[in-house]
Amino acid sequence: MREAVLLLAFVLFASALSGGQQQLFLSNGQLQNRITQIASRARGRVGVFAVIHETNEVVASLNADSRFPMQSVYKLPISMAVMKQVAEGRIKLDQSVRITKQDYGGLAGHSPIRDKYPNGTELTVNELIWFALSESDGTASDVLMRLAGGPQSVQSFLDGLGIKDMIVLDTEKALIDDTSLQYRNYSTPKAAVELLRALQEKRDVSASSQELLLQYMVQSTPGPRRLKGLLPPGTITAHKTGTSLTEKVITAATNDIGIITLPNGRHLIIAVFISDSPADLVTRESVIARLAKVIFDASISVSHKEAQEKK
Image (cartoon, rainbow, N blue to C red):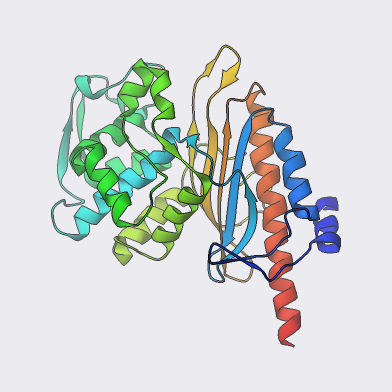
């Protein structure tokens, strides 16, 4: 509450345009200082980018053009690439896909499918997408990538959206075998926000596909203490997390990107990446939650100011 009051008192507005988007807050303003202060607690690299989708207004930006390892964040572009082929009639949501033991990665990877069906199974494409987005299942992600035509096909999908700073190269199975590969699957915060904006606008996905993807992202169980952690109860948040292993006290990736519905019905689209951090999980997730909260509050204050100006 104290943070919200400070924001309402000290938020600064600017009318200058930056990269075609209206910059709401001066770089040396109170919100920017607060974001920098919160980010410093991670003691690693932190990237943030947040936009009010309907007005194209940038609410927050910190290292927004820097590259961060995505980890499971990349399950969203993979799922979207599959959904494009569903819309084209090349893949059917109800078609069955065989999963064998050879599809499973090592036990260090997260895979409820592997844990539930150790000898393999058959799942529909729809079920695989649910497992990939709602449960962040690595096996589901790898099978979907193969179904889409491999990383080249996923990259072609991203190129078609005009997203240049998000790279998908390696499978979850490969990342488990060689953790250094995770830096090859990277995104900038800006690119992640652009992907979410493409989803919100139904670019290269049908209306029904968009609805299903957002539904599964809202249902996502990993990372409840990240973007959603400090938001008001009932705030609709469609999000996708990404988390690496911790090696020699350093965690390469603690991420969350999402579409947050504001009280006025507009959408705050936000990406927060934390890389190479020695902080513990509680601290890293708290940084994401606190960043999301101050940015959410700032977005509400912007909407309130606009409403007052229209009176």
